[in-house]
Length: 152
Image 1 (cartoon, rainbow, N blue to C red):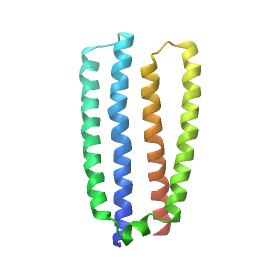
Image 2: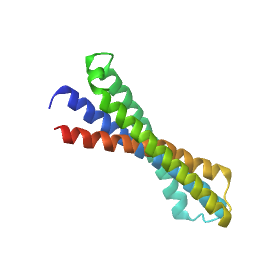
Image 3: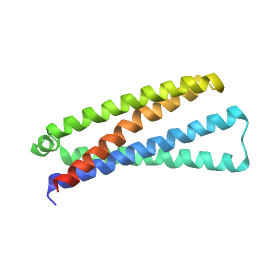
Image 4: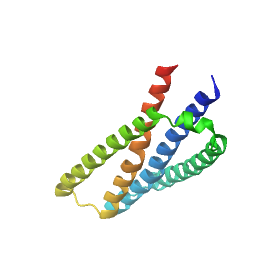
């Protein structure tokens, strides 16, 4: 495996880690907000939810460290030009498009759910935040990983 392929693999792993840890971190906070809003708090939920938030937040910090490490390896060299080729731009555009469509679908779904269930704006905003950040990152990493496996 050459150095460029190795860097692309590291980028995909880092992106998966970023998206999943962000979703766990913010999802835990969303769950905490819903539990307290609905009055569903039990001893177990009061233990599990903060643990999920902590694990997600620590994962997010680790992902940011991975990102800085990756950026230092990449630098402003020829490797960056090779890694960010035309296929990279196409994958990025496709991930953005899928993320946008998903976000619009979630907004529509939240509007429909709002007709049946009362929830606060902060719950809706947190859901949109999780979807708006995690989905495009996961889609990009998935598409990019598939492209890398196809090329190998």
